[in-house]
Length: 352
Length: 280
Image: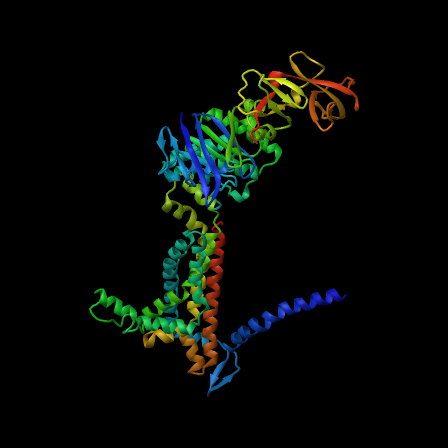
């Protein structure tokens, strides 16, 4: 157990930008803090980095309170969103800055900086100035600068948001493999769900200054605990429901049994069904829905079926089916029954 | 057609106004510096005699050099005083920062003569400075060290030109992204290390332009030396003034003016080149 947030909160004036949050980050984890803008995700990063101080609560590293530890003394290094490279220093000087400050001997510094240049693939540009680099190159200088001091935690504040899609994918893969190689904790802040899911060991989903859910990417994707999380990642089919005394859920489309290990607390609940978990045709011990096909979108690898339920045409469903070259027997305006296994359905409390 | 005519008129205007108001008088002076004075009459005969006179009389170029040295001291002391002030103001937060910078710039809106009189009242034998130093037993009795000499000119110029140093330094500090300071701390640098490696180099252009402003202003200032310098406070600008106002030797005054102007121009250009070299 390395980093620990103990009911940390931040209040500016009378605005609570971060509601009390408690979190444990074990060593060597790739943890992503994810949320829309204004959700408080960057605030968490700034609090850990020491750029701002918490209004309440404590931040502990290996059990030691960091409250009175200045930014410069925390064993963390940050990759800033705008890179924050020193414009008057070369790539080499930028990367070596942390070592220079710590009075690292010249020879050793040179060696470490060259290694870092190698790792990020910038060996050819040691004496360029930041103004002479592309966005992706600046990004890699910022990353190299943050890892040469061998911090216990690397803090990354939306570092990929300024890159184009292709560069972004490359950097995501690079970050992940770098983190595995270094075995250092990476604390990554982003607003991009796809990025967060593919890159992290664990996710913290934030909304409106509070934590919605903490979990592995699979847990977050398939077993959302709140309405926000259920709607935040990709496409989902949401239905309101009511928990009955007999241990099932009343939905507008009929009764639905509880899934295994269900831990619903309130009577007002919501069910969420991923479009890719449906199959065509009635099945036993599954939730079956009779629908009419409104539209079929061919997306190459997938067919997107837009359906309305027979019961009430206001209920719209999206189903994703793997595509194949054969002609389909599903026709627009035709009838179709879709089914989803009970244990594939996410059932969550809907406190709103 | 009409549009082109308007364009043409605008261009002529843009060229003509500075041409008439700046270049014509300077050119006129430049010409005059080659003329002679005979029997209190300006004789329009071209010769280098005014310039030769300047270089052959140690009284003139001696004063010239000592004035350059004085102005250099004003700039350097101004930066040494002004930089910490600008830095301090920059470090304040919210409205206090802008209130403070406003207070330090406010003297620019006051009359120059009033400021010099105020400084004279402070530095005089019976002035506040002497009273203060006697009161805290640094001096036994009021001293004449601070008035009617080169030191008086130095102190007064530094004080009066301070806003011209503080403002450009403050502005260049304001232009440093906050994140660079954060990044420096994040990489383990303390306040002094950040100041030395990040803030000082990045605010260098503002510091140079502040120092330049002051140097050029001090070089041309003949009122301050006259008011607080007394008989010992002779500066080159005062020499030039006396050629026009007392000796009525306008050609010689013009030649001395051209020498001063060329020197100032040379210093501005070389400082400009130097600050461009510094990769910011």
